[in-house]
Image 1 (tube, rainbow, N blue to C red):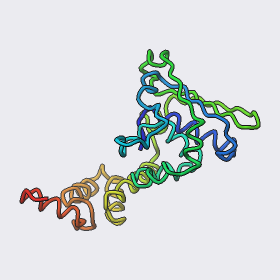
Image 2: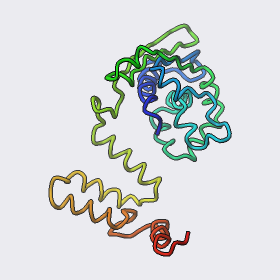
Image 3: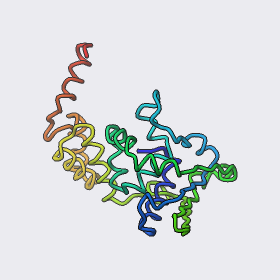
Image 4: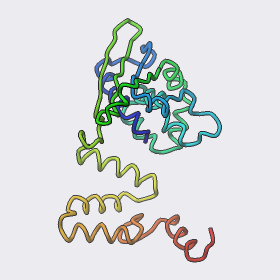
Length: 219
């Protein structure tokens, strides 16, 4: 749920978190060196300020790095939900770690469009141990695609947040798995035509209201 410029930093943090096995309170500093353009867009240590809304957390490298270290992959999945992102913004451990995250810009990275999303991230622990990780192609990039299990997991999370029931998501996933057959494609088209927010063409109340509003001009 974050800006593309942050993805490499998140992946590096998840990797180093597992290697170090350290709590956030044991981290002295985290420094992510990325493109200068990326730093300009995502270097935001105070994404909770008024006016930033739901985009604040999504475009804050400090917030996403802190969530990745404190809460891991599960926490990152949670913040697809703006309400969860807002809750995590208020957590003392997340804010405390954010204060020790620094984003450095490297204009040299900007010169190579084939490696624009690269970062070199260093974690220094309070005991002096330092670990560094370079990530050029984070998970989800064409050069490093997600596997089917991860794609399905993210799809189910997103559809859940948009009001789909689990059975509808299951049906669409099954259709996608067999999309190269007539039956799979028909299943997908049927769900999309029905609004895909319920099984067998049933729509959520929000979906029905949206269609009624489109016909009547009322909201």
